[in-house]
Image (tube, helix red, strand yellow):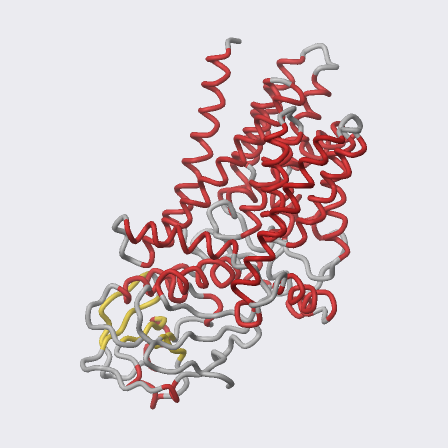
Length: 498
Protein backbone atom coordinates (compact mmCIF):
# COMPACT_ATOMS: atom_id res chain seq x y z
CA UNK A 1 0.00 0.00 0.00
CA UNK A 2 1.29 3.44 -0.93
CA UNK A 3 1.97 6.22 1.53
CA UNK A 4 -0.90 8.23 0.03
CA UNK A 5 -3.38 5.39 0.61
CA UNK A 6 -2.13 4.98 4.16
CA UNK A 7 -2.59 8.69 4.81
CA UNK A 8 -6.09 8.51 3.31
CA UNK A 9 -7.06 5.77 5.79
CA UNK A 10 -5.68 7.74 8.75
CA UNK A 11 -7.60 10.86 7.67
CA UNK A 12 -10.75 8.76 7.28
CA UNK A 13 -10.40 7.46 10.84
CA UNK A 14 -9.90 10.99 12.19
CA UNK A 15 -12.92 12.21 10.23
CA UNK A 16 -15.07 9.46 11.71
CA UNK A 17 -13.85 10.26 15.22
CA UNK A 18 -14.51 13.97 14.66
CA UNK A 19 -18.04 13.38 13.36
CA UNK A 20 -19.08 11.25 16.34
CA UNK A 21 -17.62 13.57 18.95
CA UNK A 22 -18.94 16.71 17.28
CA UNK A 23 -22.42 15.22 17.29
CA UNK A 24 -22.09 14.55 21.03
CA UNK A 25 -20.72 18.04 21.74
CA UNK A 26 -23.55 19.78 19.89
CA UNK A 27 -26.57 17.62 20.69
CA UNK A 28 -25.92 16.13 24.13
CA UNK A 29 -26.12 18.43 27.17
CA UNK A 30 -26.36 15.81 29.87
CA UNK A 31 -24.15 15.91 32.95
CA UNK A 32 -22.38 12.65 33.71
CA UNK A 33 -20.90 14.01 36.95
CA UNK A 34 -20.96 17.59 38.35
CA UNK A 35 -17.18 17.94 38.08
CA UNK A 36 -17.50 18.45 34.31
CA UNK A 37 -19.24 21.74 35.17
CA UNK A 38 -17.97 22.83 38.59
CA UNK A 39 -14.30 21.89 38.21
CA UNK A 40 -14.01 23.33 34.73
CA UNK A 41 -16.72 25.32 32.96
CA UNK A 42 -18.13 27.17 35.96
CA UNK A 43 -14.83 28.54 37.33
CA UNK A 44 -13.83 29.29 33.73
CA UNK A 45 -17.07 31.22 33.24
CA UNK A 46 -16.41 33.12 36.46
CA UNK A 47 -12.98 34.19 35.21
CA UNK A 48 -14.18 35.01 31.70
CA UNK A 49 -17.45 36.78 32.51
CA UNK A 50 -17.50 37.49 36.25
CA UNK A 51 -20.20 35.11 37.48
CA UNK A 52 -20.40 31.44 38.32
CA UNK A 53 -21.16 29.00 41.11
CA UNK A 54 -18.12 28.15 43.21
CA UNK A 55 -17.27 24.63 44.33
CA UNK A 56 -15.33 24.08 47.54
CA UNK A 57 -12.14 23.24 45.60
CA UNK A 58 -12.04 26.76 44.18
CA UNK A 59 -12.94 28.27 47.52
CA UNK A 60 -10.23 26.39 49.47
CA UNK A 61 -7.67 26.24 46.67
CA UNK A 62 -7.59 22.47 46.11
CA UNK A 63 -7.34 22.70 42.32
CA UNK A 64 -4.86 24.31 39.97
CA UNK A 65 -6.28 27.04 37.77
CA UNK A 66 -4.49 25.58 34.73
CA UNK A 67 -7.49 23.78 33.21
CA UNK A 68 -10.28 26.27 34.03
CA UNK A 69 -7.92 29.11 33.10
CA UNK A 70 -7.41 27.57 29.67
CA UNK A 71 -11.16 27.08 29.29
CA UNK A 72 -11.70 30.73 30.29
CA UNK A 73 -9.57 31.75 27.31
CA UNK A 74 -11.64 29.45 25.09
CA UNK A 75 -14.91 30.94 26.37
CA UNK A 76 -13.66 34.49 25.85
CA UNK A 77 -12.55 33.59 22.33
CA UNK A 78 -16.03 32.20 21.63
CA UNK A 79 -17.61 35.40 22.91
CA UNK A 80 -15.31 37.56 20.78
CA UNK A 81 -16.20 35.48 17.73
CA UNK A 82 -19.90 36.15 18.25
CA UNK A 83 -21.16 33.26 20.40
CA UNK A 84 -23.64 34.88 22.79
CA UNK A 85 -25.81 32.18 24.37
CA UNK A 86 -24.79 29.99 27.29
CA UNK A 87 -25.44 26.79 25.39
CA UNK A 88 -23.46 28.13 22.43
CA UNK A 89 -20.44 28.86 24.63
CA UNK A 90 -20.65 25.41 26.22
CA UNK A 91 -20.67 23.84 22.75
CA UNK A 92 -17.71 26.01 21.79
CA UNK A 93 -15.76 24.77 24.83
CA UNK A 94 -16.76 21.19 24.10
CA UNK A 95 -15.55 21.49 20.52
CA UNK A 96 -12.19 22.47 21.99
CA UNK A 97 -12.27 19.19 23.92
CA UNK A 98 -13.19 17.37 20.69
CA UNK A 99 -10.12 18.86 19.04
CA UNK A 100 -7.98 17.54 21.90
CA UNK A 101 -9.62 14.12 21.53
CA UNK A 102 -8.68 14.05 17.84
CA UNK A 103 -5.06 14.76 18.76
CA UNK A 104 -5.30 11.75 21.08
CA UNK A 105 -6.56 9.52 18.24
CA UNK A 106 -3.79 10.78 15.94
CA UNK A 107 -1.07 10.25 18.54
CA UNK A 108 -2.35 6.73 19.31
CA UNK A 109 -2.13 5.84 15.62
CA UNK A 110 1.35 7.31 15.22
CA UNK A 111 2.61 5.52 18.34
CA UNK A 112 1.21 2.17 17.19
CA UNK A 113 2.69 2.68 13.71
CA UNK A 114 6.10 3.43 15.19
CA UNK A 115 5.97 0.27 17.31
CA UNK A 116 4.40 -2.23 14.91
CA UNK A 117 3.72 -0.75 11.47
CA UNK A 118 0.77 0.56 9.49
CA UNK A 119 -1.67 -2.20 10.36
CA UNK A 120 -1.22 -1.38 14.04
CA UNK A 121 -1.91 2.29 13.26
CA UNK A 122 -5.22 1.46 11.58
CA UNK A 123 -6.33 -0.80 14.43
CA UNK A 124 -5.25 1.70 17.10
CA UNK A 125 -7.12 4.42 15.24
CA UNK A 126 -10.30 2.37 15.04
CA UNK A 127 -10.06 1.51 18.74
CA UNK A 128 -9.47 5.03 20.00
CA UNK A 129 -11.94 6.60 17.56
CA UNK A 130 -14.76 4.23 18.55
CA UNK A 131 -13.89 3.36 22.16
CA UNK A 132 -17.18 3.85 24.07
CA UNK A 133 -15.63 5.55 27.14
CA UNK A 134 -13.62 7.92 24.95
CA UNK A 135 -16.82 8.86 23.08
CA UNK A 136 -19.05 9.23 26.13
CA UNK A 137 -16.49 11.41 27.90
CA UNK A 138 -14.63 12.82 24.90
CA UNK A 139 -16.64 16.03 24.50
CA UNK A 140 -16.99 16.76 28.22
CA UNK A 141 -14.86 19.45 29.83
CA UNK A 142 -12.90 17.20 32.16
CA UNK A 143 -9.18 17.40 32.99
CA UNK A 144 -9.05 13.61 32.63
CA UNK A 145 -9.77 13.94 28.91
CA UNK A 146 -7.08 16.56 28.37
CA UNK A 147 -4.71 14.37 30.41
CA UNK A 148 -5.43 11.44 28.08
CA UNK A 149 -4.31 13.48 25.09
CA UNK A 150 -1.17 14.79 26.76
CA UNK A 151 -0.08 11.37 28.04
CA UNK A 152 -0.36 9.57 24.69
CA UNK A 153 1.46 12.45 22.96
CA UNK A 154 4.19 12.21 25.60
CA UNK A 155 4.48 8.46 24.91
CA UNK A 156 4.81 9.20 21.20
CA UNK A 157 7.47 11.86 21.69
CA UNK A 158 9.68 10.02 24.16
CA UNK A 159 9.87 7.04 21.79
CA UNK A 160 11.33 9.34 19.13
CA UNK A 161 14.97 10.26 18.72
CA UNK A 162 14.48 14.02 18.78
CA UNK A 163 15.78 15.88 21.82
CA UNK A 164 13.26 18.68 21.23
CA UNK A 165 10.45 16.17 21.43
CA UNK A 166 11.95 14.86 24.66
CA UNK A 167 11.83 18.41 26.00
CA UNK A 168 8.27 18.75 24.73
CA UNK A 169 7.30 15.45 26.33
CA UNK A 170 8.57 16.59 29.71
CA UNK A 171 6.76 19.91 29.45
CA UNK A 172 3.45 18.30 28.45
CA UNK A 173 3.80 15.69 31.19
CA UNK A 174 4.36 18.42 33.75
CA UNK A 175 1.21 20.17 32.56
CA UNK A 176 -0.70 16.88 32.85
CA UNK A 177 0.36 16.60 36.50
CA UNK A 178 -1.29 19.94 37.27
CA UNK A 179 -4.42 18.82 35.48
CA UNK A 180 -4.64 15.78 37.73
CA UNK A 181 -2.02 15.09 40.36
CA UNK A 182 -2.32 11.31 39.98
CA UNK A 183 -0.70 11.76 36.57
CA UNK A 184 2.53 12.15 38.51
CA UNK A 185 2.65 8.32 38.53
CA UNK A 186 2.86 8.35 34.74
CA UNK A 187 5.45 11.14 34.77
CA UNK A 188 7.65 9.08 37.09
CA UNK A 189 7.02 5.94 35.06
CA UNK A 190 8.24 7.52 31.82
CA UNK A 191 11.38 8.79 33.56
CA UNK A 192 12.19 5.35 34.99
CA UNK A 193 11.52 3.75 31.60
CA UNK A 194 13.97 6.08 29.88
CA UNK A 195 16.58 5.44 32.59
CA UNK A 196 16.23 1.65 32.35
CA UNK A 197 16.68 1.87 28.58
CA UNK A 198 19.90 3.76 29.27
CA UNK A 199 18.70 6.72 27.26
CA UNK A 200 20.40 9.08 29.67
CA UNK A 201 20.39 12.16 27.47
CA UNK A 202 16.70 11.72 26.62
CA UNK A 203 15.94 11.21 30.34
CA UNK A 204 17.85 14.37 31.22
CA UNK A 205 15.99 16.43 28.63
CA UNK A 206 12.65 15.00 29.75
CA UNK A 207 13.39 15.61 33.44
CA UNK A 208 14.59 19.17 32.84
CA UNK A 209 11.39 20.10 30.98
CA UNK A 210 9.28 18.27 33.56
CA UNK A 211 10.83 20.33 36.36
CA UNK A 212 10.35 23.55 34.39
CA UNK A 213 6.67 22.73 33.93
CA UNK A 214 6.44 21.94 37.63
CA UNK A 215 7.95 25.33 38.43
CA UNK A 216 5.41 26.96 36.14
CA UNK A 217 2.57 25.17 37.94
CA UNK A 218 3.93 26.25 41.30
CA UNK A 219 4.11 29.87 40.12
CA UNK A 220 0.53 29.65 38.84
CA UNK A 221 -0.60 28.50 42.29
CA UNK A 222 1.40 31.33 43.85
CA UNK A 223 -0.32 33.88 41.62
CA UNK A 224 -3.82 32.46 42.12
CA UNK A 225 -3.79 31.00 45.64
CA UNK A 226 -0.95 33.00 47.20
CA UNK A 227 1.28 29.99 47.99
CA UNK A 228 3.38 27.87 45.60
CA UNK A 229 1.88 24.37 45.15
CA UNK A 230 -1.07 25.35 47.34
CA UNK A 231 -3.51 23.26 45.27
CA UNK A 232 -1.34 20.15 45.61
CA UNK A 233 -1.11 20.36 49.40
CA UNK A 234 -4.82 21.17 49.77
CA UNK A 235 -5.68 18.28 47.46
CA UNK A 236 -3.53 15.84 49.43
CA UNK A 237 -4.95 17.13 52.71
CA UNK A 238 -8.53 16.49 51.64
CA UNK A 239 -8.15 13.26 49.67
CA UNK A 240 -5.39 11.40 51.53
CA UNK A 241 -5.07 12.79 55.04
CA UNK A 242 -8.78 13.42 55.59
CA UNK A 243 -9.97 10.68 53.21
CA UNK A 244 -12.56 13.18 52.01
CA UNK A 245 -13.18 11.62 48.61
CA UNK A 246 -14.60 8.51 50.30
CA UNK A 247 -17.67 10.57 51.22
CA UNK A 248 -18.74 10.14 47.62
CA UNK A 249 -18.61 6.34 47.85
CA UNK A 250 -16.08 3.53 47.88
CA UNK A 251 -15.74 0.53 45.59
CA UNK A 252 -13.85 -2.77 45.48
CA UNK A 253 -10.36 -3.16 44.06
CA UNK A 254 -11.77 -4.84 40.92
CA UNK A 255 -13.86 -1.78 40.02
CA UNK A 256 -11.76 -0.58 37.07
CA UNK A 257 -11.41 -4.00 35.47
CA UNK A 258 -15.14 -4.71 35.83
CA UNK A 259 -16.35 -1.38 34.50
CA UNK A 260 -13.81 -1.07 31.71
CA UNK A 261 -15.42 -4.33 30.58
CA UNK A 262 -19.06 -3.26 31.09
CA UNK A 263 -18.44 0.14 29.46
CA UNK A 264 -16.46 -1.27 26.53
CA UNK A 265 -18.50 -4.44 26.03
CA UNK A 266 -17.36 -7.80 24.59
CA UNK A 267 -14.62 -6.12 22.55
CA UNK A 268 -12.78 -5.57 25.82
CA UNK A 269 -11.65 -9.22 25.55
CA UNK A 270 -9.73 -8.41 22.37
CA UNK A 271 -8.31 -5.26 23.98
CA UNK A 272 -7.11 -7.26 27.00
CA UNK A 273 -5.56 -10.02 24.87
CA UNK A 274 -3.73 -7.50 22.72
CA UNK A 275 -2.43 -5.63 25.75
CA UNK A 276 -1.13 -8.83 27.38
CA UNK A 277 0.61 -9.80 24.13
CA UNK A 278 2.21 -6.37 23.87
CA UNK A 279 3.28 -6.42 27.53
CA UNK A 280 5.57 -9.38 26.87
CA UNK A 281 7.65 -7.30 24.44
CA UNK A 282 7.08 -3.68 25.51
CA UNK A 283 7.22 -4.18 29.24
CA UNK A 284 8.16 -0.64 30.15
CA UNK A 285 5.15 1.11 28.59
CA UNK A 286 2.79 -1.68 29.64
CA UNK A 287 3.99 -1.48 33.24
CA UNK A 288 3.26 2.27 33.30
CA UNK A 289 -0.35 1.53 32.35
CA UNK A 290 -0.66 -1.29 34.88
CA UNK A 291 0.94 0.74 37.67
CA UNK A 292 -1.49 3.60 37.06
CA UNK A 293 -4.53 1.30 37.18
CA UNK A 294 -3.19 -0.64 40.17
CA UNK A 295 -2.54 2.52 42.18
CA UNK A 296 -6.07 3.75 41.48
CA UNK A 297 -7.51 0.38 42.47
CA UNK A 298 -6.03 0.91 45.95
CA UNK A 299 -7.83 4.24 46.42
CA UNK A 300 -11.26 3.67 48.07
CA UNK A 301 -13.20 6.21 45.98
CA UNK A 302 -13.32 5.14 42.35
CA UNK A 303 -14.86 6.51 39.18
CA UNK A 304 -14.30 5.19 35.69
CA UNK A 305 -13.24 8.63 34.45
CA UNK A 306 -10.16 8.38 36.68
CA UNK A 307 -8.87 5.66 34.32
CA UNK A 308 -9.37 7.75 31.18
CA UNK A 309 -5.93 9.46 31.19
CA UNK A 310 -4.23 6.16 30.48
CA UNK A 311 -6.85 4.66 28.13
CA UNK A 312 -5.57 5.90 24.72
CA UNK A 313 -2.09 4.59 25.56
CA UNK A 314 -3.61 1.27 26.66
CA UNK A 315 -5.57 0.96 23.40
CA UNK A 316 -2.53 1.84 21.30
CA UNK A 317 -0.45 -0.85 23.01
CA UNK A 318 -3.33 -3.32 22.64
CA UNK A 319 -3.41 -2.70 18.89
CA UNK A 320 0.34 -3.34 18.75
CA UNK A 321 -0.11 -6.62 20.64
CA UNK A 322 -2.90 -7.80 18.33
CA UNK A 323 -0.73 -7.13 15.28
CA UNK A 324 2.14 -9.04 16.90
CA UNK A 325 -0.15 -12.04 17.43
CA UNK A 326 -1.55 -11.81 13.90
CA UNK A 327 1.97 -11.74 12.43
CA UNK A 328 2.51 -15.21 13.86
CA UNK A 329 -0.47 -16.67 11.97
CA UNK A 330 -0.70 -17.89 8.39
CA UNK A 331 -3.55 -15.57 7.42
CA UNK A 332 -2.27 -12.34 8.90
CA UNK A 333 -4.27 -9.90 6.79
CA UNK A 334 -7.54 -11.79 7.16
CA UNK A 335 -7.16 -12.00 10.91
CA UNK A 336 -6.39 -8.29 11.24
CA UNK A 337 -9.29 -7.32 9.00
CA UNK A 338 -11.70 -9.53 10.95
CA UNK A 339 -10.52 -8.22 14.32
CA UNK A 340 -10.67 -4.58 13.19
CA UNK A 341 -14.19 -4.87 11.76
CA UNK A 342 -15.55 -6.93 14.66
CA UNK A 343 -14.03 -4.71 17.34
CA UNK A 344 -15.24 -1.54 15.63
CA UNK A 345 -18.78 -2.91 15.27
CA UNK A 346 -18.94 -4.02 18.90
CA UNK A 347 -17.61 -0.65 20.08
CA UNK A 348 -20.20 1.18 17.97
CA UNK A 349 -23.07 -0.92 19.32
CA UNK A 350 -21.92 -0.37 22.89
CA UNK A 351 -21.95 3.40 22.34
CA UNK A 352 -25.59 3.62 21.24
CA UNK A 353 -27.26 3.29 24.66
CA UNK A 354 -24.61 3.45 27.41
CA UNK A 355 -26.05 3.39 30.91
CA UNK A 356 -24.67 4.98 34.05
CA UNK A 357 -24.43 1.55 35.67
CA UNK A 358 -22.20 0.25 32.88
CA UNK A 359 -19.88 3.17 33.59
CA UNK A 360 -19.76 2.42 37.31
CA UNK A 361 -22.03 5.27 38.38
CA UNK A 362 -25.03 5.14 40.79
CA UNK A 363 -24.51 1.47 41.49
CA UNK A 364 -26.73 1.62 44.59
CA UNK A 365 -29.62 3.35 42.80
CA UNK A 366 -31.54 0.93 40.60
CA UNK A 367 -33.41 3.48 38.48
CA UNK A 368 -30.42 5.81 38.03
CA UNK A 369 -28.12 2.90 37.25
CA UNK A 370 -30.29 1.87 34.28
CA UNK A 371 -30.62 5.38 32.89
CA UNK A 372 -29.03 6.02 29.48
CA UNK A 373 -26.23 8.60 29.64
CA UNK A 374 -27.10 10.43 26.42
CA UNK A 375 -29.40 13.44 27.05
CA UNK A 376 -29.95 12.47 30.69
CA UNK A 377 -31.30 15.51 32.57
CA UNK A 378 -30.27 17.90 29.82
CA UNK A 379 -33.67 19.67 29.69
CA UNK A 380 -32.77 21.81 32.72
CA UNK A 381 -29.62 23.05 31.04
CA UNK A 382 -31.43 23.88 27.82
CA UNK A 383 -34.06 25.83 29.76
CA UNK A 384 -31.33 27.65 31.70
CA UNK A 385 -29.87 28.80 28.40
CA UNK A 386 -33.35 29.77 27.21
CA UNK A 387 -33.86 31.88 30.35
CA UNK A 388 -30.50 33.58 29.87
CA UNK A 389 -31.64 34.91 26.49
CA UNK A 390 -34.74 36.65 27.89
CA UNK A 391 -34.25 40.44 27.84
CA UNK A 392 -36.30 41.17 30.99
CA UNK A 393 -34.70 38.58 33.26
CA UNK A 394 -33.59 39.86 36.69
CA UNK A 395 -33.52 36.65 38.72
CA UNK A 396 -34.05 32.91 38.25
CA UNK A 397 -35.50 30.44 40.76
CA UNK A 398 -34.65 26.83 39.91
CA UNK A 399 -37.01 24.14 41.21
CA UNK A 400 -36.29 21.50 38.63
CA UNK A 401 -33.11 19.92 39.98
CA UNK A 402 -30.46 19.83 42.66
CA UNK A 403 -27.93 22.63 42.17
CA UNK A 404 -25.02 20.26 41.59
CA UNK A 405 -26.77 18.62 38.65
CA UNK A 406 -27.31 21.72 36.57
CA UNK A 407 -25.15 23.71 34.21
CA UNK A 408 -25.25 26.79 36.47
CA UNK A 409 -24.10 30.08 35.02
CA UNK A 410 -22.27 28.30 32.22
CA UNK A 411 -25.66 27.69 30.61
CA UNK A 412 -27.52 30.69 32.04
CA UNK A 413 -24.79 33.15 30.97
CA UNK A 414 -26.43 36.23 32.52
CA UNK A 415 -25.36 38.37 35.47
CA UNK A 416 -28.51 37.83 37.49
CA UNK A 417 -29.03 35.99 40.80
CA UNK A 418 -29.67 32.26 40.50
CA UNK A 419 -31.61 30.78 43.43
CA UNK A 420 -32.89 27.44 44.64
CA UNK A 421 -36.39 27.90 46.02
CA UNK A 422 -36.74 27.87 49.79
CA UNK A 423 -40.35 28.96 50.40
CA UNK A 424 -43.30 30.60 48.66
CA UNK A 425 -42.22 33.94 50.07
CA UNK A 426 -39.15 33.84 47.84
CA UNK A 427 -41.07 34.46 44.63
CA UNK A 428 -40.20 38.17 44.63
CA UNK A 429 -36.49 37.39 44.30
CA UNK A 430 -36.88 36.13 40.72
CA UNK A 431 -39.15 36.92 37.80
CA UNK A 432 -38.42 33.55 36.17
CA UNK A 433 -38.87 30.06 37.58
CA UNK A 434 -37.60 26.80 36.10
CA UNK A 435 -39.69 23.81 37.20
CA UNK A 436 -40.85 20.37 36.10
CA UNK A 437 -44.35 20.17 34.70
CA UNK A 438 -45.12 17.60 37.39
CA UNK A 439 -44.49 20.27 40.06
CA UNK A 440 -46.48 23.08 38.44
CA UNK A 441 -48.78 23.23 41.45
CA UNK A 442 -45.87 24.65 43.48
CA UNK A 443 -45.35 27.48 40.97
CA UNK A 444 -47.31 30.59 42.12
CA UNK A 445 -50.24 31.46 39.89
CA UNK A 446 -48.68 34.81 38.92
CA UNK A 447 -46.14 32.89 36.83
CA UNK A 448 -47.07 31.80 33.33
CA UNK A 449 -45.23 29.22 31.29
CA UNK A 450 -43.30 30.78 28.42
CA UNK A 451 -41.11 27.87 27.35
CA UNK A 452 -40.86 24.10 27.59
CA UNK A 453 -38.08 21.57 26.90
CA UNK A 454 -39.11 18.00 27.57
CA UNK A 455 -40.68 17.96 31.01
CA UNK A 456 -39.00 21.18 32.22
CA UNK A 457 -40.76 24.50 31.81
CA UNK A 458 -39.73 28.15 32.02
CA UNK A 459 -42.23 30.35 33.90
CA UNK A 460 -42.38 34.15 33.94
CA UNK A 461 -44.22 36.78 35.97
CA UNK A 462 -44.60 40.49 35.34
CA UNK A 463 -42.51 42.97 37.29
CA UNK A 464 -38.95 43.16 38.55
CA UNK A 465 -37.04 41.45 41.33
CA UNK A 466 -36.50 42.37 44.96
CA UNK A 467 -33.14 40.98 46.03
CA UNK A 468 -30.64 41.74 48.74
CA UNK A 469 -27.41 40.14 50.02
CA UNK A 470 -29.42 38.65 52.87
CA UNK A 471 -31.54 36.66 50.43
CA UNK A 472 -28.54 34.72 49.12
CA UNK A 473 -27.64 31.44 50.78
CA UNK A 474 -23.96 30.51 50.87
CA UNK A 475 -24.57 26.76 50.67
CA UNK A 476 -27.22 25.83 48.15
CA UNK A 477 -30.09 23.73 49.53
CA UNK A 478 -29.61 20.03 48.88
CA UNK A 479 -26.13 20.54 47.45
CA UNK A 480 -24.03 20.98 50.57
CA UNK A 481 -22.17 17.73 49.91
CA UNK A 482 -20.91 19.25 46.68
CA UNK A 483 -19.80 22.41 48.47
CA UNK A 484 -21.34 24.73 45.91
CA UNK A 485 -21.43 28.43 46.74
CA UNK A 486 -23.22 31.07 44.66
CA UNK A 487 -21.17 33.95 43.40
CA UNK A 488 -23.10 37.09 44.30
CA UNK A 489 -23.59 39.74 41.67
CA UNK A 490 -22.02 43.18 42.22
CA UNK A 491 -22.75 45.49 43.95
CA UNK A 492 -23.85 42.94 46.57
CA UNK A 493 -20.91 42.05 48.89
CA UNK A 494 -19.65 38.46 49.00
CA UNK A 495 -21.68 36.25 51.30
CA UNK A 496 -19.81 34.21 53.87
CA UNK A 497 -21.20 31.46 56.03
CA UNK A 498 -24.58 29.74 55.88
